[in-house]
Length: 394
Image (cartoon, rainbow, N blue to C red; front, side):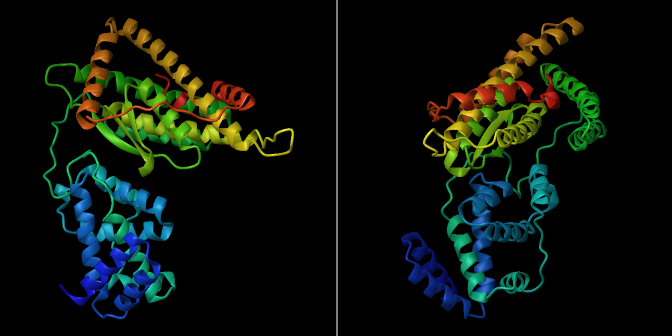
């Protein structure tokens, strides 16, 4: 073991003990060494590789880093993830990983040593940079094992034979473009036109996918994604995600301490759950801001209980509206197709339930308890009635 390795180990031990003086001393000695850049990056790279084997994905790592440390540490994590990913042939990296890397803008943008390049970009001191990467390393080495959602990089990707009547990328691109126009326009009539067109395309896609997968040898089983849930009011946001998922034949497992929820379902539904959650969360937050502040008769603020009640009521009413919309659409589609879709969709949801049991065999459910405010509940219920569900009127 080199001296640099010993200093890194000492710094990690100091972090675990929350001994700031010992950590600062180890970091200072490490920063003075010529081999610090090479050795520290190598150690972080090995830690990242270990996370892939433990079920983590790039977006998960950056999310937890920003949540527990800072935006700077998140940028450093994205950089070093990009560095680690150079070791894999593109054909052995799952497409979802590549999408995450693109969204994170993770790239090897530097030449030479990373610490020197990071220091030059930030305009900070070398000790600050070394200390920051050591803090990142301390976090990465202490993360728990997660459920595996996809093959880790380096594993051969499983290919699925193309089916002629699945929706083409061209059609999906049209849907995304329609939704983008609906979100950008300030005219309600235009938004209605765009979202209705997108809904028509995607509703057909979802039903077609369910019918296709029901055929012998058709389709893959349920999959899973992770959706970040940020403070404040994480619990009520998790409830909103859960009711959206349930109305779309998916299930949600919330990992509160890690800041995300795992959503299980079929690919035809998962992307829509995430999209609809984002859209409705924005609408809820906008409506919440417009309600202004609330105070008790004594003048003391009651914003927290008001907002929690608002979001709880919003989620409850949205769940009811989505369930009603789903039931109506299934009835209409069954009539138009001359086929009862209820058994097909029920079997599909049963597959999702089995996937939950396999992935989370020790799952424990807990009751949701939030502070309650009568006015906040009424306002949230009203906002949910006014919220647009046009992103996915099933």
